[in-house]
Structure formats: C-alpha cells, structure tokens
Image (cartoon, rainbow, N blue to C red; front, side, top):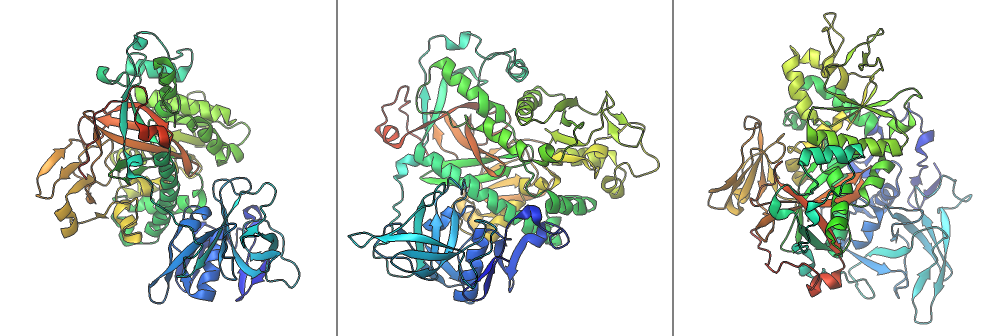
Length: 637
C-alpha cells in the first residue's frame, strides 16, 4: 500500500514483478471488486479512479480500454439506482478549474504510451493540484498526506487554469467533473459522416503487373508467389490495379475501436470462464475446461496477435467478430500491400499495414517465449501442408527471428517422435516445448475428438499406458509442459458464442451488433445473420432480410454446429464489390489494417485482398485524388 486517499481509499503499488504468488496465484486474484461491483484490474490507474468514485460518490464510469478515453465519456452510472448522471470534460487551460473529486486525465504518449493516465484530484489551489493515483510509480506517498504528488498550476490572465506537464509525460488533456453545468466544457462534435465512407481507386495501366516485384530470395515472399502463382496481391485479374481508400478520421476510429473491443472481449472471456452454463454454450469438451481456465489464469497477457473484421457504413463502425486464435492475412497486410503500392505507383495516402511487422516483433519480445524460454530451446512453428499457411508461417518466422527467438518449421506430425524422457521431439530429436501454430484451436479439437477415444484422453495427453506408437497432435497442443501460441484460452473470444455475451454485457455499444443465442423478435424484424459458433472463412453463413427471405447463403462444414444470430449490418458495396476492413492487434493493441473485397456480401477464404490506403481528411473530402473511381457506395444496413 502506497497511501490512503480521502474517504479511506487505499492506493497500491502495481509493481507486478514483486507480487507474492501466494496472494495472487492466478488471473482471478487480480480482479478488483467491491460489494459485487467490478472496478478493474489490480492495481491500475483506472481501477483506483473507479474505486474512489464508488466509495465516495456512489457512481462509476463505464469500462474503457485506455485511460485517456475517460475524457470523452459523457456520463457516469449510480450503482444503487442505475441512474445516468452527466459528466463534463474541461480542457487543460479551461476557465472552470478542477475541483476535489474530479478526475485528471492524461493523453497517450511518453510515460503513458498507448494508455494515457487518470488520477483523482483531492486538493486545488491557484498554484497546484494534489492528486491520488495508482500505476504512476511505486513510491509511498508523503508522510501523513492523502495524496501522491503535486502538479504545478498557473492561472492565466483570462482566468484559464493551466497544469504543467512533467518532462517525458504525455500532455494533460484536462479534467472531468460530474456536473450538469456545461459552461467552459468541451463540445465533442461528431465527425463529418462522409469521412466514414469507403472509396475505391484504380492505378493507371502501365504493365506494372507484368514484371516480378516480390523478392523470391526471401522464403516468405517465395512461398507467397508460389501460392498466388504469380507476383500479385489480388487473385482476380480485374482487381490487379484496384485499391481502397479510407480517411484518417476513419482509421483513427478503427484504432480506438480495436483497442477498446480487445479489452471488452477480454472482459467477456473472463465472464464466460466464471459461468459453467455460459461456457457450455461454446461447444467445447468439458474435459478441456480446466485447461482453458488454467491457460486464462496463467497466460492472460500471452496472446500475440488477432484480427477484427469491421463494416464501415452509413457513418458507423461495427465489428462482426474477433479472430484472435488463427488470424490470417498478416503478410498480405504487413508486407505485400506496401510492395504492391510501390510497384503500381500508388501514391495516394499512406499504407496502414506498414506498422504491423514491427508490432509483431514487439509482441514477441514481450512474450514468455522470449523471456522464459531456455537457452537451448527453440519455438516450433506447427503448420499443415498448405501453401497459404506456409507463407504466413514464414512471415511470422521473420518476426520471431527479429525478436531473438530461434524457431523451426514443423509441417504436420509425421516427423515427430517420443523422446527418451517421454517428451515429444521433432525429426532432429529437438524437444517440442514452445509452439506457434497456424491451425485454429477448434480445428485441432476436431482432430483431437477424432483421435481420442474419450474425454479423458483429451484431458490427459500422453498419460495413458497405452501410449500410441507416434505422438498425435493432442500430445503436443494439450501437453501441460508445452507452451502454445495462441494460448488455449483464445478458444473463447474466437468463438462466435462470445457475441451474445458481449451484447448482454454492453448493450447498445457503438461498435457492437445485437447478437443472441435465439432468434428474437427484434432481430427478426430488422433482418439478421445466422452464423455457426465455430465457423471459419465465412462458411455456413445465412443473411436473412426483414421478410425472412434468405438473400445470401454460403456452404461449408459447420452446418451441424450450434448457431448464433446477429443483427444484419451489410458491408458497403462500391464499384461492384462489398468491402470489409480488417484491423490487427499485436500484444492487445492496434497494429495495422487491410481490406477484403468480394462481389457477394459474405467475405470468404476466396475473397480478394487489395491494398488499403489512408488519406488525410481534407483530400478525402475533396475527392480529386488520382485514380478515384466515381461510382458512389451503396449501403444496405
């Protein structure tokens, strides 16, 4: 404990490396709850701010992915009645000064990279404010003080109240006060809805596609060319010179949505793993449940990367799902679309996939595979004999190498064997202890169900006396001493059964679609989409209109799986194609973007990927950038 703020609210150190494992044995031990109210993660800055408000004021603010987002909240919720109370934001320098009990909010950057920061104001004068906080440093507060530190202030000639920003810190956005008085408060105007349109461009035809432009001396690019059959980004001839353009405002919204939704999916995962009845709806063998919960407790922060699928239409941004187990398209977005723009002379805007490679390297550097792997241990990249998986794996191997993690490719289980000590080894006798796989966990579970005689075999791979002659997939992926990426718990957020759970937890969330386990009158009246809970690549999806007529349906191998129902929200259709924007997370944060297009409204494994470009708002609205295809977008929400 570092100190005690007014109201008897304790502030704690968040030096996690020094935490006592007996006090914090698992992920659940880090949940902060009071009177059954979830307050956040011990001991983050947001948790302290929410706990202080609950104890002293009886209200809390809604969940946020990043602390800086508190500055844009417009209400708080009383716990006893559920009543919403107005919340106003005042920019640093505003003529209404902060007051005890308000929240001081920092922007992202500097010391508060990516997240921002929040603190509770406890004392105010013309020369300073004193604040109480967590997760700034780990030093005890001044003796006898109910505050952590003092921030210098200055009152300007026009009455503006300014707070000094410390060296290396991000800027102070300002303060938020629960008040109905909006004098001097910030007004957050919605952006021009035209900035959320999706547009299509076409590069001039100068024969650019006739030349080789990917470097086949690089293994991943050679595998990519082999899979595509040529040097091209899109498979269809008509898409060779096509690209998609979004505005800077739209991309910023995608970044915020990615970060926020990742956090919400994590909250929902924790919620599901605490409720057997909910977990049963995910169609996972019960014998695997303890392993999933153990994975969540021990490896919560070990997810490397995932991909969100978004629709941008009618000024709105809606997420369809989160592929955080077996996401693909990384190399296409992180490398090939940038090379395409150079080859085809596309100078419109910038490439939003460019940061992805560095973000993957950073995520791997922060993983246990980098920090806890033994000096002689390698990470095995476990792939099927598939050309697309091969180039995806080789691209990820580049990121692993840049992160200092040695790796080997292992195609299937044909060369695996039992070692002298009962471990699984590769064809060279190297023990398999760290794995990154291209297979989805659900695909692996299907194989395990077929390979194993009963649930006990699934739960205890390699433990039976009648051990098979050669190791099976189960003997690697579910072996306790083998660390697999993505972790086993990613089965939960990747399963579409999470979507009704999210809607129950966060109804009317701006980026979520109404979803349910049963078809409701509301969904029926507005049109809906029926999806299998474990479908992949757009398989077995049916789009149904408000008259209950099926307007689009795909085939696949998941028709026997349980279904969920999601609000119909169609992709925009531009120049003959429906366009879906995808964003990637790395280490839980936004890392890059790409687009998939298709003549039909369901994106499948056969849908094309074309280059995505991001244009500044002014140029986007002026609509005179090179290659603009004039056909307007159509929206069938």
